[in-house]
Image (cartoon, rainbow, N blue to C red; front, side):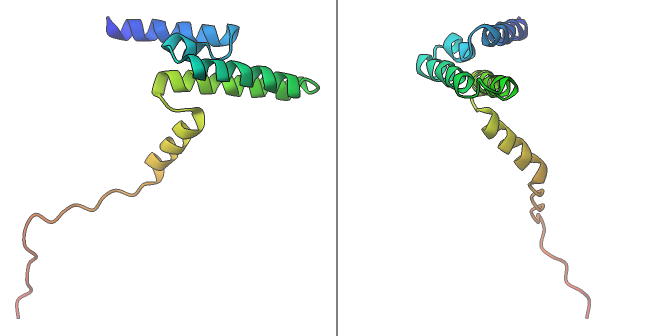
Length: 105
């Protein structure tokens, strides 16, 4: 039942982001962060309004960041860095559990 609630909650957050950027954070109760995302999306839309494609991408990036922070606790940049570290980090060498063998003289 918890998985279903999580899926429905995340779906509601996603729909909320379409209506109001920052809605995911607002629904999580993080009012300051939610309002910051709302104002950032509005500012990006106004500043880049002359180029609608860039304005749309900027608003979309702010919405994606808000959703990512509400779901995983990290913004999209932090999540991308963590993902890249998990692919590039070499495996730890296995610890020796027995004494090394000596060669016969």
